[in-house]
Length: 187
Image 1: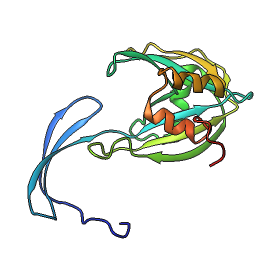
Image 2: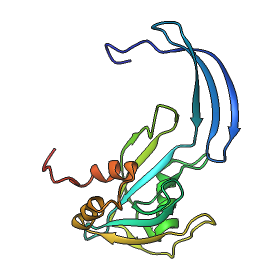
Image 3: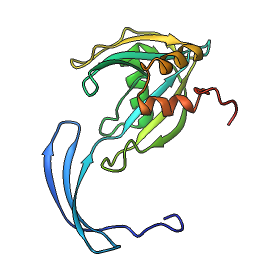
């Protein structure tokens, strides 16, 4: 634990909630160490995720456009998906890139992982950089996908951000490890 951290909350009991396909709901009763108040919290257990910044030999990023049920809009994002049980995050990144876009490569760099929302999610989102990707296959979309892919320069990515089409927080975090998206110069 970092210095000057508050103590963890004591778990009194846990009960399972509904299984929602990609999330298992848990209800936790936790005791606040500051005042001993017991609160019921919701925790979503989910598999890890991957987000892939895929760059062509020309340095352009492969993006996907798809309809998102949550915000009811077509969004611009980067290839991403679930890490299947028993699969490494790199294998999941390569699989998702190939399935969603048809691009492949053997040049992979792990950027890091982030917690998508630790307030109620338990999983990690692994960020991968795929270098020198080439279109080698046709996309292999599953029944719940309708995705179009294209390549964009940094300027085009910044325009997508400015016009509100590229607002997916995990995609922006991954892209910001590779590009200066907001024109702030070197970090």
